[in-house]
Image (cartoon, rainbow, N blue to C red; front, side, top):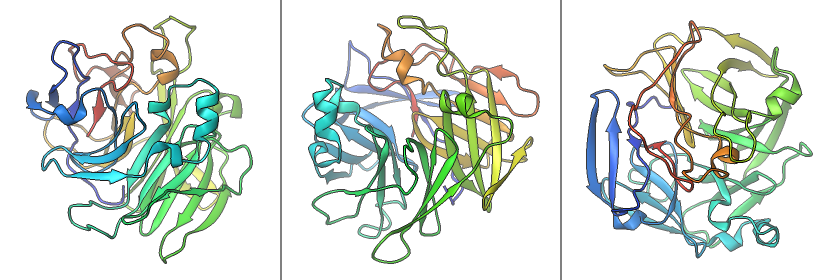
Length: 323
C-alpha cells in the first residue's frame, strides 16, 4: 500500500467447536482478543489492505466486504458474474475460493463511493475490478499472454499486479476509465522455473515498488506437510530494471494469504523483517488439518526464521491471515 499503517492483527482460523468466536492476536503486544462474528461463520476470508476490512465469500457464491470493527457490510455482485467462473465449476474446483487475492484502493469508511476493489480471480488468475454502484465486475484482459498473477498493490491511482514469472502490469485508474501498461521485469538470480513454482508478492512503500519472492511453498507431495519458507528475496523495481534489496531499514513487511503490507513497525515488531502467514494453499488443501503451518518471521539481514504466533491454528478454507 502507498500509506504505511500500524501492524495488522493476526486473525486466527475458525474453530469447529465454536465457529462464531474469532480470535485476533496482536503481535506487537503479545495478547489475544476475542470477538463474536456470526457474519463470518463458514465463510472464506481474505484481507484487503486496510485495518479491519475483509473480502468474504460463501458456498452460494455471495461476496461481500465486511469491516470487523464497525460491522459495516458492503454487498458485491455474486461470484458467478466473474469471468471464467463457469469453467471453474466445470473443472469441479472449489467455487468458494475462486478469488485468490483482493485489494481496496482506499478505505470505504472514509471514501464511501470513491474507491476501487481489485480481485485476482482463480482461473486463469486474471484481474477484475469493481466500483461502488456497479452491478458487475469488469475483467481485465492482460496484454502479456499466459500471465497468471500472484499479487496486486495500489499507489497514486494505479494498481500494480505481479505475475509468478515477475511480469508487472499497471492498471491506470486516474480517470473514469482504466488503461493498461505492461512491463516485463526479469528478476535477478531467480530462474523462471523457480519464480514460477513459488509465491510472488508486490507492495508500494516509501516511494519504492517492491517485489518479493517466497521460496519453499511447493516442496511437497499430496498429503505431505513438509512445505515451508526457506528464503525471501526482495527487489526494488525501477521502470523495467531491478535491484535486490538486502535491508529494508525501518520497514517491516506483512504478507501471506491477504493483501501485502509495508509498515513502520510499532514496539514488538522489527524493521527488515518479513512477518508471513501460510500461503501455500496447493499444499494445505491436500491435508486434513488445512493451512496454518508455514508462519513465522524472516530476518532479511541474516536469513533466520523464528515463530511469531506459537499456538496452533489450522483451517483449509481460511487459515490465519493479517487483517
